[in-house]
Image (cartoon, rainbow, N blue to C red):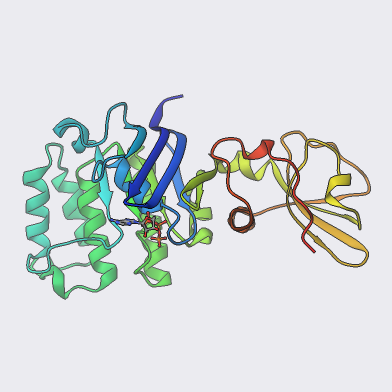
Length: 303
Ligand SMILES: Nc1ncnc2c1ncn2[C@@H]1O[C@H](COP(=O)(O)OP(=O)(O)OP(=O)(O)O)[C@@H](O)[C@H]1O
């Protein structure tokens, strides 16, 4: 398996504020990775470390086999769109493409021109006069037209209306399918991520809480409904992430790498949103472990 991003004990501290802590992560190449987590969890910090905009205060990170921002060749292989989709308000759309062409050795002028035409944007239009969504599209066009091996997008759809969001993600998927680019994108919109991502990284309180291929994660997490019982009476090997009880019934969200079936249980699959929200809620009540979430003991039932 080729790894596109490898972090070992990675941390970033601003004065006394720990923006990212003890992050150990290995992201396989060829994936569309969804990076999720509550506000302030450290998502932008991780993405900025990955493209070399900031440097770690502890640990190491390698992207495409070398230190981020370590040279022109490395920079050329990574496309980054920051959270505020920065563009130059006074420059036209065509000026942006010209800038992209001059700054990037592998610039794909045909791709850039075709995207702008598809989006129905006037090349002569000043970018400061475009809507937030159109500016996001111009920023994405610049990032993909440099033909990177890894595209890093920090909340790319936050400013877009639902239709523009759908079109943006559809366009991104078509691009990825055609060019095989690896993508890491952060978003609070898990339902969007569910449509496009095949790998998930969840950060809570500056730590990696869970990471893995979406199919593996969904295949090892379930909603288990049974006659009322306490979490600690469930078989060993089930990690109880959440427990709720009525007078007669208990519902557990469990993680189980190999599941023993019991006819007294009803097991239902989780969707990605359930899974992400469960871990986020768990992160609020217990400090997250960086790399071994499945080994934690079952928690006390919440009543
Ligand atoms: N330049 C900075 N100086 C000081 N603190 C910072 C700086 N950048 C980030 N932080 C702090 O680091 C923590 C993580 O911030 P970060 O922007 O990475 O979170 P995030 O998960 O991207 O949040 P959001 O979802 O709100 O965008 C926050 O507590 C933030 O205040």
